Length: 252
Ligand SMILES: [Zn+2]
Image (cartoon, rainbow, N blue to C red; front, side, top):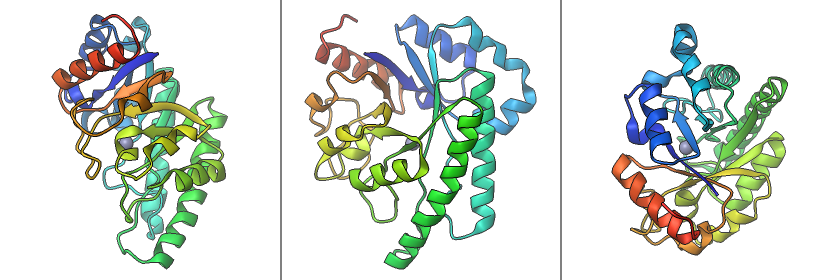
């Protein structure tokens, strides 16, 4: 398996420091969370700092900015801005030769079925355009499943598979989010998955605990092709890597 981690664990450090750390600790990939200092629009404007990626033999994934954005928003201005930032993330992916990008499917603020149905339509329309733009630039575009709450789209395997199919893109399966549903194993059947986000929790809340510290059935994450450990601290990332390697019969 290829194992990596989300840059969330090393937030605020330079690309070079994170890439060095990943290489030093034997990771094969890394996902950059495109928020704050790694916001695509400003990274693209600075440009100079991007050559560093060519010096490392790591598969890079980008997590599109999602804070305060929403491809399913009822407000068309927010949908437009979300698409614009998604396209900027795709442009950044092209520049650094990233393997793929992932994003969230959106959410509703008013918990009513008719609002939710409308939001799904908006999200499909919006994310289909993003997916087409990614295709035109040779980048793999994927949508992530969300925790089991009514407010989030793609909160079940069924809805996740539906959205991915409708948008003509790939899936990123977050096993921590999947573990907040009654049947996390169903997410393993989504056939367009390109990689997995890995973290543990108590089965109720998306707690981002190290693997093995929650209720996630670790057998579910055996033999995955690509797994990105998504935790707040780098110490917890290394702890989870050990668990994952042991599970897959790999050395440190
Ligand atoms: Zn995410």
